[in-house]
Amino acid sequence: MFEEHEGWRQRPPNVVDALVVPADVAAWAACAAAGPDAVGPLAAIDPARIGDAARVDLLVGLERQIAWLQACQQRVLAALDGEALSWAGEESTDFTQEQVGAALRLSPGTAASRLAVARTLGDRLPAASERLSRSELTYLQASKLAEAVTPFDDATCGVIEEKVLRRAGEQTLSQFTATLRHAVLAADPRSAEQRHADALTERHVVITPADDGMAQLWALLPAEGAALIGCVLDPLAVKAPGQTRTADQRRADAMVDVFARVIADPNLPEQHGARPTVHVTVAASTLLGADEQPGELTGHGPITADHARRIAADPSGTWRRLLTDPTTGALLDHGRTTYRPPHDLTDFVIARDRTCMFPTCCRAARRCDLDHGQPFDAGGSTNADNLAPRYVGATTAPNTKPAGPSPTNPTAPTTGPAPPDTTTPCSPRPTHQAEVS
Picture 1 (cartoon, helix red, strand yellow):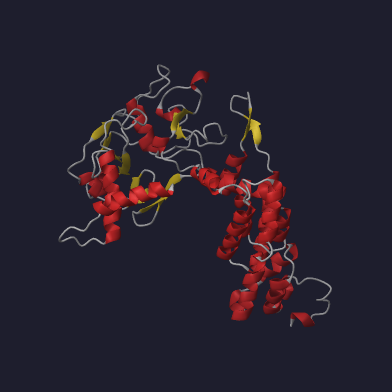
Picture 2 (cartoon, helix red, strand yellow):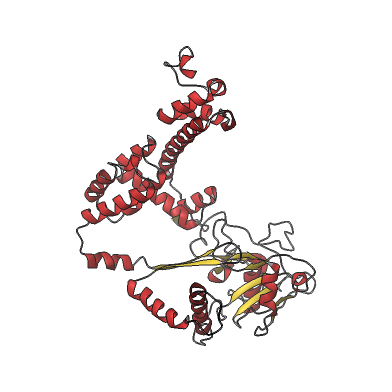
């Protein structure tokens, strides 16, 4: 037994102890204060050498260490100062969000949220921060609390913190969230109408890729807006004789059909000088059945070869051609004759790069600005090698991905393949297009 080792009461266990009596070290770690002394011994324990009870102890010990390490990380995030000069060297800009996103492989929004949580914990929630460092609070609980107290003054923030921490150590995340909501409502002196007005400012729509060629559409809407959508979908989804689709399937199809009709409206705003489109990129060899390369649905990601072929084969589709240089397969260089890329060059860059070229940004290229890698006013040309899609929030950030190779720098990193003589079929609806490489 670890307890029988001479001197164990005077010192924490070490790696040798973890190898000799792993179950006892796990039991110690499940109760001992988290910190650097326990990390090495816990990592040395082989779960296969201990029983289930000891494995649970090991799991608890590791969870305590994770909470402690996350508390350490919050202090680092809160201390970060990402101010630096812009590319032109003329103004100081805060690049902390971009630095954290690139370093931790986080999207810009997630990086901003992590920074906000860390700063709130450090500046306004000292008790919660201390609980996290002692492993008496999980990071998910701490982040929920930090997000909830954002709109409140320091005094109200302290009241909410004191109430929710009373039982936080014995609550699941769901139970903690319910306690937090109750504390916020009790501490909020504003009227219900004012809270509703504040909530209205948070309305938004999110489309998230899912597996198997599917996607999730999520919206935070005013209650009456959601009711309007529901009362339109219900009659559109009435089951017709002979139909085998479920009610859920009919409602989902009805929602797509509503937007399919709207997109035919000639008054819809244009993007990059063209009507809104849904782009699918697929190899010509795949369309011909010579191979099974996945297609790429812009804003979603990979789709199966059969899925891409169904889109391309739909008789309602149209085709258009992206004109390229017959020798190099790249669009002809427009030099310095124009700052704004012409339509053919815009189409080419969007089809080639597909998404924003900032390392952690997945925004579709068609929703970005086409940015000159070398600024136009500094001698940069308007050509495919010097253009890349960048979301406005990332266009001033350093360390963005470079444009593709050029005749003067053929080994430069590429932003994507340059498809020669690229042809574009349409998807099942005339406004869905596919870039065929």
